[in-house]
Length: 259
Image (cartoon, rainbow, N blue to C red; front, side):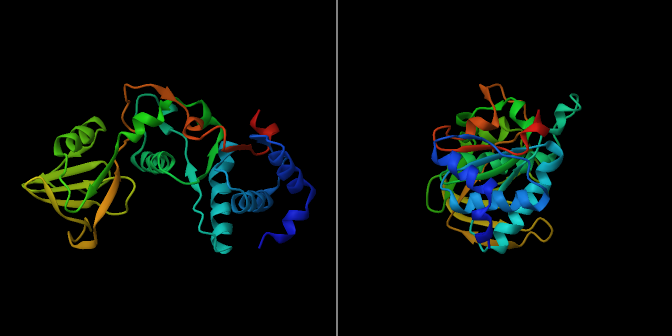
């Protein structure tokens, strides 16, 4: 799908600079869908993780193009969109739940193994966010047949501002009814239900909040409990700190517009 792009001067220049060891790539202005095609080609052919930084107003559109092109090329890669913290504009409010959910998904992916393609607006580089080790503390594995560290689980839920409710309806909520704990984390489309026998995990399944019926059973789940809505008292960094500077590539799209 991207064969014709490889011979273009702009594309050859980018690959040449990467081969020479550059890690911060300032791309020449690329128009519309052409930019999406070029970055999709880079995502397909390179082995490094990519953080693509563009003008804030272009970020989501560029992400959508790259996602669509990679899907059309039948690529297994799933790019991630990292939105700005909307609470920075209105300091008296918390970040919106939907935006926090999107950001939390990105944090969980970046704390895990494997390669990532993240597209974001320039303003996010200046946001001070919890450092990766602190975010990773919110990742919690639950496996059928294992003992569940309930004290640590509830401590993490409370530290991340999850609301305890009689029944969960939305992300960042949990409920406890006897031996059953329901948790709606931002990284899954459905809440998870953990049923215990003593301290042992007897069953793990996802369920619908509308019908309360199970949608899927699982042997284990890896829950990303970190909640960006909460102002965490911890060391701060930036989204760039979630990437290994020695191996990742930082691509600045249309640098003149970013100045």
